[in-house]
Length: 416
Image (tube, rainbow, N blue to C red; front, side, top):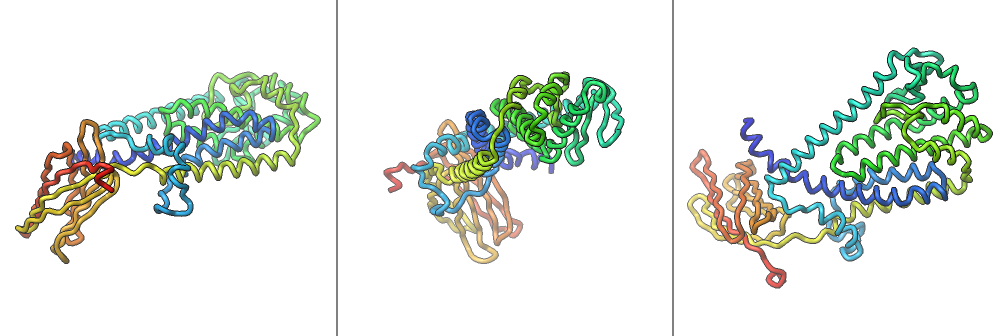
């Protein structure tokens, strides 16, 4: 059983590669767009709008994974209109890798995901250990170390962590502002956003854009939180800046926590305290971002429907079914299943073929054969174009089928 599963793994894992690449490409394009627009958005509409724009990154990735709309659907733009996205997404989503190569790529990706996740969890645990045994007082937790916190730690029931000398280091006004900052993180569920970002980073460990985007997103998160606290306490900008200057940088970076003293540019945060964005502009910016995210997600989804059609192939068959010989032909495109039936009722044989081009003038034929509606087997054959490949099945009742398949390319002129 284990050997059969290991043999079937290439066929099971190779289909994962195209959607993985498609989602990664859509995610990268969205990340580039947000990185280019975050500063103009912050200047025009405020830090909160710039932070909200990062939601477009996972939305576009998810949209690229949705099932494609039927051909001719009104939701799908013509191929010419979607050519830029088609080039950026669809071309990368159809790599010319053999099933064995795709299998190795997927295994390497899975190993990288597990390693990246282990590193993230290790960093989070190191940060929690650096706090020591926290003592809860007044709804907040005082760490043993003066270098831990202020921070918001935890996903479902986050807890505000403050340094051991919190009451001595900060004035009453500064403590009020720090707690307001962390409670704003909790109200907006920012720890969950950080966890989702960490998960995306693990899944796309091979993509340097995601590592850059995560740090920029966390910076925008802090700026957006600062802006909201300042709006609620407009006369406390000086105290807020003093609290930032009194806070020491932590030696540990927590992937899932919201850290007051993380490595975000302190100068940028202090300067941002003096910026005030009218509510009308914030509403306009939020509306603009919502429209842009909707359009971007739809475009990422629609691009897969505009992908160029695969190569057209002819499958010439010599079939022996229960002693009879037939010679049918099938025309199919790469990646598109083609099926044929022979016989009637319980004696009917059905064979479905899906072709995938491979380097070196070869093609991989993935087949699914059934008899009388019951599965018989799923053989996979790697064969050179123009060379015959034989697949044979024998049943306990002496019934059998033997197929000799010869695959050739059909040129565009011949297809017309």
